[in-house]
Length: 631
Image (cartoon, rainbow, N blue to C red; front, side, top):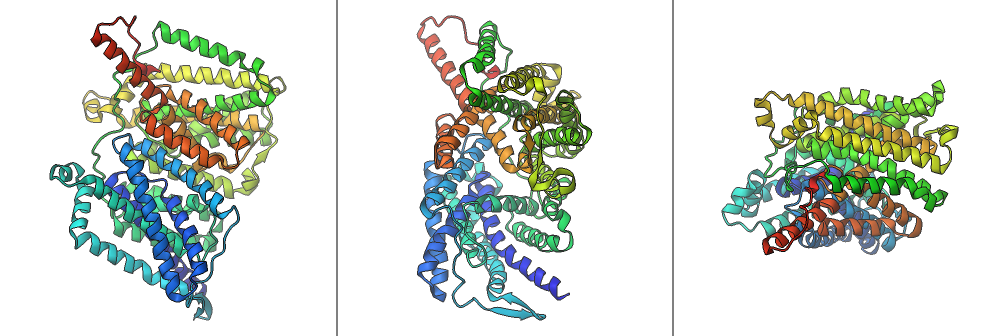
């Protein structure tokens, strides 16, 4: 009994710092509608700056002053980020904003390594709070009791700020109806800036609070952001009370899960999020999110199949791809194989997002299921690579049939978060089911058949698969099924009136997308000769999102360009630079600013604008260009 009481109190202490970070993220999303992936980076930077200051100011007052000063410094950084970057993309698709904040996360990870070094930093104990208190005969740090008291105090202060000040009234109004607040003459730019600054301050302060309890590392941003997203979704987007309640729930799950159910402790948090999303999509204390705009509506006109010029360009691209190994060495050919696999993975996600209007944050689940399905069959049943190329995608599709039944009942951010929960539950199972999957050691010895064992042969296999998948995706887009899917994306209510079943059509699209992602997973496993749980991780899903968004969200095959650019750049940076994330993040942010509709989408817009001006001036421009949406 004494142990359970101590675990409960420890969970409450953890909930305090989690609430601070989650409340900031909830505030930012509630007003600006930005899914701020960089929130964990601000948490990490706050911890590093607080570490530096607390080492110098080792007095009871100096510790708390150090936390406040570091949080204020990070809030100032947040203001600069909001003014210089986010203001430029507030009217861009929301997923593009996610891409920009992910770029900031990459920059922050290498920036702290550059400034503070790669080693973990162990900060000093909180001055004056380094002792312990006996609870039922078990020692518990005094600092934990301070955190337990701090959580409700911070919640009360934020509540007073939001409900007893004019600024808070405007923030709450903007959360409910931004357009009306703008019509009333409120300067939304500075309102957004102030909210972003407060959210960043809370995240950085939460990071500083962790110094006496945990080491400061350059991986702590990604370790916290997942939990924070889960808390915000469970509690309700934009609800501070919900974030506080969810922080307690998640912290207690973490505290007792490892004690009572260690075999599934990693699953519990995501299982609870999935259950909440299915039963109450807007969270425990949240309200349905009112969308001011839809990212699914295309801006480049109707999509059309390729004309003669487009077919010729595709034929040339295919010919170049086939001949590529003759100009590359074995290493270059292996990299090209990775690019082809990335194309398959990216276009399977592109079909779901651009054609279906379903934004998935957990697409890595299908890739990982395909890879593990093939690897397990090879290991336990000795099947050939040729058969595994069929079995792996079918495994991914089978799981998608079950998961999709729940996921397609939601939309917008709720669909995205449920797919994230689906992927994380599968990752947790794979990671902890050591007897079957090997756990962290993975499955090794998954090699291709003899005829495909050389780099050139395997590249041509991957290229053939990529060509077939891209062709299949384009065919489906212009089939009656594709038109039904696009109609549901653009106008669900009108589609329902003409008899199109939203859940049925989107469910089929979810399964089709998972099937082709599973194929990418099988090819990935055989190319690497092994498979590890990271294949189902958040970073793999984010890679897919980056490739789609870089190429062009409102295109059919823009992910092909995005996959080529992102994969080549990331591999080259990893091989040739000491700080690849810093450079890659900077490139991503730059591309988001310069190409707000993706590389293909923005290039299409530039060409169409040029042609329009030429036509208006009376200058001949030759045959009209085919609509770029089919690019």
